[in-house]
Length: 396
Image (cartoon, rainbow, N blue to C red; front, side, top):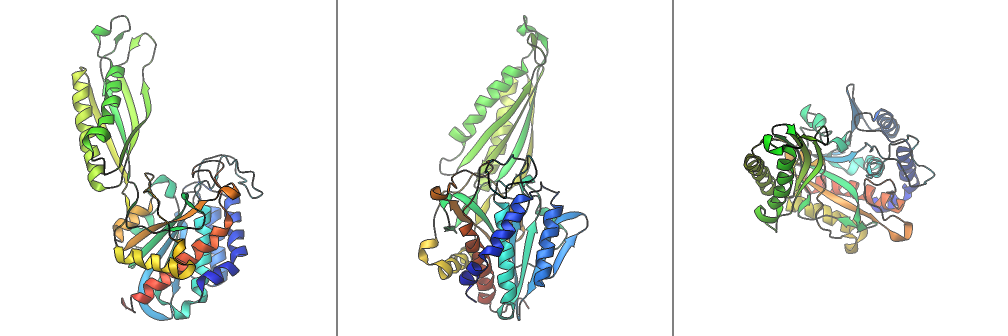
């Protein structure tokens, strides 16, 4: 099947799905209406669908006509707590909730790929699983499906994200890091309270916290390699009760992003040392609560990456491929990549000045040129079909 041509023929359907999902966004763990819509669309095609009584999202399975391995295609389905400001005819009907990260696009493209693969299933080697995943925005939504054994038979996996640093319609399939890890931390500084007129009688937690904030900047500037990107950000500071009281407690919260496990571990170790020793120098004590959330998204399987690049060239020619700098944002797909090492993640460009698609993700004005939707659907399908065919019937 010519997936590119067939996807263009299905453009109206894919766009209609995307607009319905965009108009009815739901927050993480609450994607009940979205899941019901997906199940309805998939079952009408005749595709078997697995649902979960205690969890949103679903998994569709397409069994090919030839024996072979199992490949997973994944799209995320949750929205964000953001007020939409696009002015689109199909804007969100739920105040304060919006598909501002493109998950509506991913979901519609995967529905389109489901149709393509279902129509060509007799020529398909092995099995395609399509995961419509809940709760990506809260970092751990993917865990449910793997932890319950729903994906234990998967040999390879691919995820995709529309991306505003690449031109609309371009595909980014790069070797190595694509997105950063995400860890959060809480630093609690404890001093001794005193009257504001007698700071010498206390131990000022605010001063100690301020020193810690400044010293944390040296993790990136003096501890980490300049060739291995790292971000350390303090996002909140809570301290004090009155203007004339020396605070005895200060609490800092923030995030660390890294493109490698080495930089990630370095940051955790250095932060512990800085917090401990800086607070001690101020006569205070302090502790770090480090919470790892997501690992880096890294395309480490070069052969699989080439399958995806070859699929893109086959569909749209050499000019469709594009390169971008790795992103310091994070992605829940990294958990599945840890469990399924034979995995990759790609970007589908959505930056289009002519169409006014210039805003970043997680912005109330974010939107895309819907001409990219058939491109994503075709890429999903072509990658799955090519991977299974090149596996040569293995796995059965």
